[in-house]
Length: 219
Image (cartoon, rainbow, N blue to C red):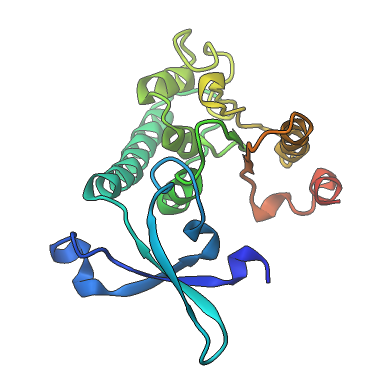
């Protein structure tokens, strides 16, 4: 089966206390999280075990530290507060052009970006404020870009839909629906051609699935 259809049973570590641990409650994560991953999740698997009674499956225990969990929560709260302020400033006509928010998507955004390594690439679409925040770009530089300032991540020329940070290998949001997918394919092929272990994460949404570039990229 594809890795994201096989589930890994995960139990909260014993060194967490109170509501954070939820009395050892178990939950499930994609099996891919149980492999060597990226930044805060690279060393999170302590052991695996096989169970064969009713079909073989794997079980892993998370070894994230309290500091790592707090940082994950911090990023989600940061994205929410950033987006709320962006919405406020947009309604006050302080931010020009369009402004698409990640409110309600914080956990999905942080969960997708966290396993990546610093050498991996991210390509997104026009709803990408949270994506670049989760990658570690300074919020002030992102907000400056929304304001059209020269100190922004794209020199004030890109605005909300075209954020960019080459130092963190964030290759931009794109205003054309589906326009990021062929670029992601090219980035991935470049990594393969150069013989690296780099991963390219491409953000998209169901609204782009009727665009020709989606089908061309999947092919």
